[in-house]
Length: 191
Image (cartoon, rainbow, N blue to C red; front, side, top):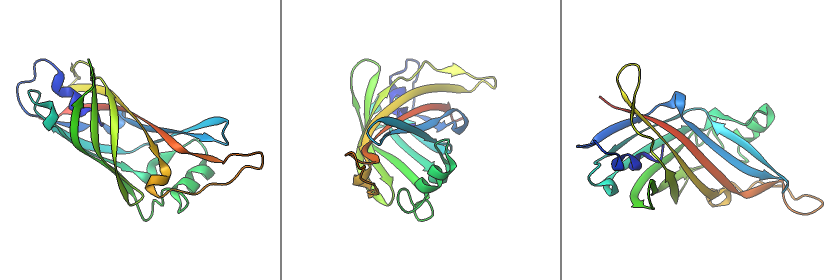
C-alpha cells in the first residue's frame, strides 16, 4: 500500500496513473515481542487506499491509505478485544489508522523510501517505509493492470500514545515498545 511510488519506475508508463488498493489481496501485518521471548503477529483485515503518480517524476507521487482498526486479528479473541480497547488502539474513539505520503526518495535498484504521516490513536508522526518492488504489471482476467510490492517499517508504539504494559517478575515487560510493520500490497490500475 505504501509502495505505490515504486510504480513510477516501471517501463511503459507514459502518463499520470491512478491506482487503488485491492483489499482482498493486501495484508497490513505487525509483529511485537511478548514477554521478551517471542513474537506475536497480527494483521488488519480491511485496508483501503489510492495512489497517483507520474512515472517520469516519481518524487511527486501521492498515496493515501486507511486501515480499519476494528479489523485487527491476532488469532486470539481475548487479545484482539484488549488491543481494540482503551489500553491500546481504542478503536471506538480512533477507528481508523491513516498514512499520507509526503515525499518519495530513491533507495537503490528496485527500492524506494516513502516518507509520510502515520496517524494512529489520535497521534500523527512522520514514518519512513522501506519499499521493495513493484512486481511487473500483470493483466487480470478482466484485462485490468495489477502490481504488487512490500513495504516495511519499525515504529515505537509509545510515540503514538500506546503505553500500556506490565512488568515481568523476572525482569522486562509484557509487550515491547518496538513494532515491526510489513505491508504486502496489490494495486489495481483505475480505468
